[in-house]
Image (cartoon, rainbow, N blue to C red; front, side):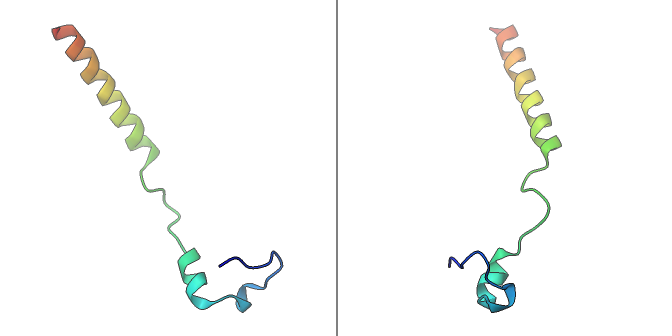
Amino acid sequence: MAYPPDTDPEDRDPEDRELERGSDTPALNPVLIIVLLVMLGLGVYAASYLL
């Protein structure tokens, strides 16, 4: 539900406030993404070496 910009958080629906809460951690760690990309690159390199 869209509220006007100056709406007090206490005046909002409790269910909406509950939905706004989220985790502060990202879904995937950026280091994990980099490691997976490096592994993918090494896999492509190995495959091109074999062909």
